[in-house]
View 1 (cartoon, helix red, strand yellow):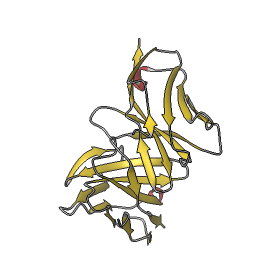
View 2 (cartoon, chains in turn purple, green; view 1 turned 90 degrees about the vertical axis):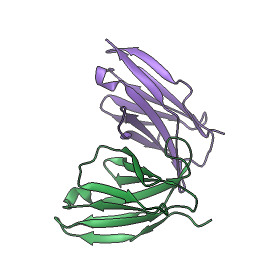
View 3 (cartoon, one colour; view 1 turned 120 degrees about the vertical axis):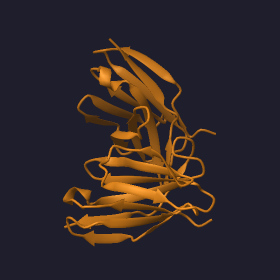
View 4 (cartoon, rainbow over the protein chains, first blue to last red; view 1 turned 135 degrees about the vertical axis):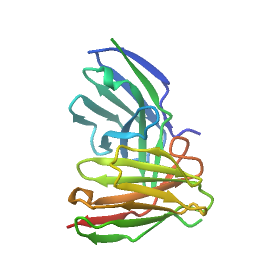
Length: 110
Length: 114
């Protein structure tokens, strides 16, 4: 039973447009959420996080939105750039646990 | 089941020194991942070891290294410490790896570099 789900295995977005990556979770005990970016043959790199007391956190081109009632978070990348092509993982943390989703591969099209 | 243990819990070092941190995973878990947590940089992934092999590595300089023993215990070493290495270092264990299932954190080692 997946507690953290990224339902889109891949996403293609035109360069310069907005990329929206989605993540759903099932456990209300999660209180801290993170997004990581991963290139092939490398480990995940932390991008941005949000605590459950907030509904939005912004860092440059990256914004994470949290909807606690829907148990849903999303990562917005604006504007999308070629270097954003990678696999994006969301993660949910609470207590002594962290669980990663299975990732969404983002392709930025020229 | 006993949880993940980390030693030492607190450490104070000076710049230029080296440090070794230890992590004992939950019994039966073969994957150990290391993270660095700082207020400004979030929870950064350092590396993952599985069955004594480094399987994934984050974007950290070569001063950060690790290893895993046959009993799955893992050590992380940081050489030539810098002030910016002050952080909470967390290890997390899981049965198969960070991408595939729940990882369980240890209590962390808080490192202060003076």
